[in-house]
Length: 341
Ligand code: P6P
Image (cartoon, rainbow, N blue to C red; front, top):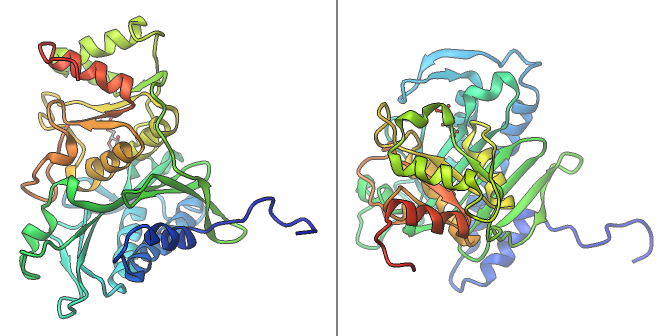
């Protein structure tokens, strides 16, 4: 068309979700309506994150959350916005948040309440005051047919391989939503001029191999020895080139780089955190789901993250997630006797 219109059709996340759904017979518009609750909430969150220094929202709320962490004011805001926007979606029966000790039940009376949304409203929030990227993660599971609406535990505590969708928003130099419903991984950049998430990274594939490893090296004396053997291998050039280190200290940002550039992100078990620091349900599971749908892999050191049966919503897990070459090498280091796959 003449004039200075876009050189290719702009596609918003809503349009993409509807198209994506067409590949899934039986998926209904309710799913795109559910995901629009997440996109609306994250637009509101990013508006606050971008103005944090200006609106006296820095600093802690003074409260301590269920994790025993001092709640940053933005944490509280992000949690309340997500709870509000998502509780307006009748298809959601349960909301489980990193900031709430117990899951919240919503729309219990509705037969349409078939999804649970499990999320971390603002991961990495301790970085907010120093202007480092933070993120929101989300995981969506359907109520199993044999689970009663009142059986919150068995509805929420499903292994990650039962997720029907997952993703994250990274509030970085730009605001990017990355999600998958199992048919590819897609990225949308928020266009502030339009106020819409616009398709910017269609069908993201993790490179076969990267050049960075990402881990907090301050704890390396506490890592199990096989992790240090692995890191020494990466540094030595044994995989074709010596690796460099990149560690932001904000999981969503560290993973997003790994997704786009390849490499590996690790949060190993340590003496102080024998089960690792990251949470299975709303940190490791969505990240692992995205990684696998983009051709990567994610393990807790011995098990596929997505096969772990959760015991409680805030349980922790070690996490090693990355591209094929690095994950193959990791498996060799932790299971030297295992036959090559
Ligand atoms: P450490 C942020 O607090 C977080 O939960 C993740 O986003 C991040 O990957 C990790 O903790 C950083 O932890 O111990 O390296 O400061």
